[in-house]
Length: 287
Ligand code: ZN
Image 1 (cartoon, rainbow, N blue to C red):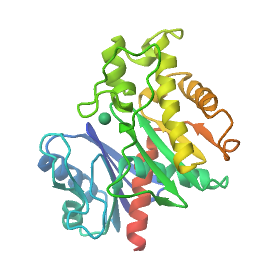
Image 2 (image 1 turned 60 degrees about the vertical axis):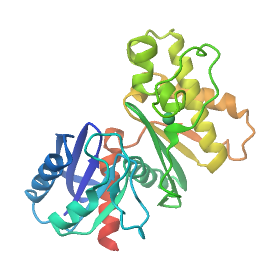
Image 3 (image 1 turned 90 degrees about the vertical axis):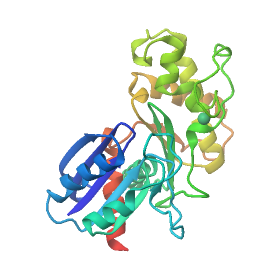
Image 4 (image 1 turned 135 degrees about the vertical axis):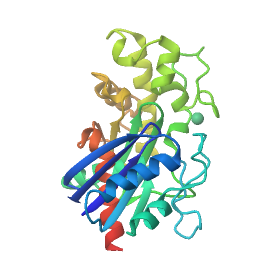
């Protein structure tokens, strides 16, 4: 039996399954301080029977360099108490099993990649648009890591002509993508979520434009075949279609792969992250 954790800033989703395709049980706990949350997660996982491996997809930033003594740590998060938390080490010691570890969005990208691979897809990016904006990428089955990991929420889009005044809410960058297009940024401008605003409200075109620019950047820099967009804001009816249309306009047919490049909702819906964490467990078991 494999164990999985999708470690988020507001909740931890836990699951066990015999394979990533078959989740047998799941549980969710609120993210409190590390001592409380990690102990609760370990207790639930241990109560599900004997595990052979655990996979963790975590909020970040995290250390992914396998040669670093801090591998498996959450690093300089502003989230109180979680800075320098050795999350992978805690579970490896407590449960006595190999632990696979990556970002929550790389885990989701792995799960979506596995689903897309059936259609011959070899490169994919996963973007989540919610409380924050993050992204992961998979090329030929491997999550993309560099120095650290991608932080796609913090790229700078060109400002929309109807959105010049808003300063953006990212504490580090102001008007980066997350500062302009995350759920809290939408609320800060218009006092409501995107799905609460009427269909003809300019917010829909403005947010679609920013996310489409991020998709275009992914197509242009990494030549990914598919961008999958999840997260709460992405559930706004019609948004994915608006993003896809705007990204096509921005690309202007120039990119060599444009005929095959698509923007889609997650095949796994809200289960992309936890399914990917089970895949990380399977990989840890095989190593
Ligand atoms: Zn930022």
